[in-house]
Image (cartoon, rainbow, N blue to C red; front, side):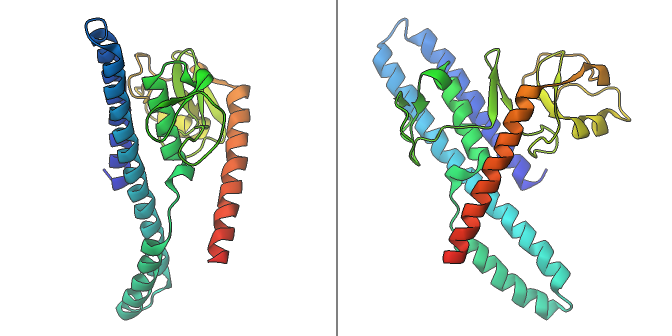
Length: 245
């Protein structure tokens, strides 16, 4: 399993831990000081958000180094040339500033933790950088509105395909469980294997995925198009910052 997949797995575990502690806090608060329990819960959320920020930064840097490695391999005719180019490119990657709060993985993680900590908080408030609930609408770096996921029936659905991890271009919903995949990815997976179940962690659906189960979702498609426009804008902004530097 590659490094990026390990990071994704840890992020999922951190969200699951948050859900577990939320449930435990609800039970314990019936017999103890609710305010103290809530404080401990929020402190735990803060630590997990900080851990996620560090993990996503490492993942982003790892991916950038991998991309540069491939470029250097293609551009190098000799070992000496490879070593020189790699030294130059890797040092540039290490020096480059990574704004984790603009990375989709972190933003999706923070929203999932928010939902796990404060059910219904997407409508009533947000989790700020210090883990506390925030009911205002002011935008800043430590209080990011996490977009790119859809709340349906109390569940969180990522706009990123569970197989390819890429933003879905042609989203379809599994009518048996409600989870969403990219049509190209799921059709490729089930093409030669009829024994594929929903890959979303914790999905209770035991039925094998069939083409007839996959239905288009116009609302999700609109959100995907909006996400694509936002990421394009972020890439353009990052490019301008690099040019200024």
